[in-house]
Image 1 (tube, one colour):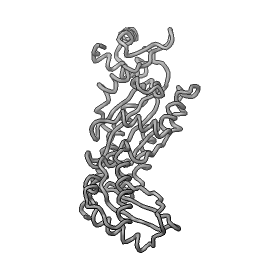
Image 2 (cartoon, one colour; image 1 turned 180 degrees about the horizontal axis):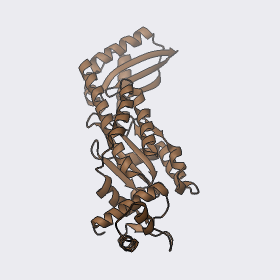
Image 3 (cartoon, one colour; image 1 turned 135 degrees about the vertical axis):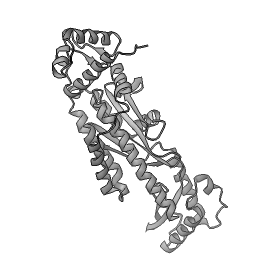
Length: 349
């Protein structure tokens, strides 16, 4: 078990993390004293760096080189130095203004959030659309396309939309399809899968068949970990110096671009509470693809109704002091928008 640190050791560790984040170069004692105007001798700083190395918070890449943080060094820095840091007011106002302009356009929230996160963190970002923990029916449309084919559009409370093309046993006129949709909307609106399954069996064959498909669609939705996933800023990661001549970044990006792998990451790393931030450093021994990387994740939304995930992915040498408060602030902002949307839907009913 690693020992706690003195105030001076905490300062030196924080300055090394900060300097290495900016330069990607090992940090020496003379650099710390001169660049940060420390009221300490280089010998004193060097001794503290040796102590931090012996306790596992720093490592020395080469015999004559300076030090760089280890995974444990980054974890200590995140946990004890920057986890509760606040986002500067200027950044808060800028982000809030961008969302205020798009607050009426729900479809723009996710790509906008991903873009802002990537820009603010100078890393890659991911945002998942809010996903209903329990599917609740809102509206159904049945649209005749050609022959026996019908497009079924199902909207859930919380904004999730699913579309699928059905092939009926025989052609059905649009008028008949619209009537069936109106009937099902009347009896199903605001109901959960369990409530709809408990309804009396429909005597109308078309309505019965459509309702079976609706329930199957709602059940599939509940089994998904997240809604649609939006990615941005992947080129930011590829341009980092530690990734230029290695396959580490490409392996990590493959994890983010492969939907099934990303779903697994989100399911196993999902932060417990809405608004809480979780930091994964070096893959935490679970994801080999992330051994040179860090991921900062948070949940947003309304527990028990609709939640999503957002996060930032980059090298372990990440600007945690900027990234963590940005992710937390964005999660709070998106939670407020989801709450407003759901409240508006409830008021309409």
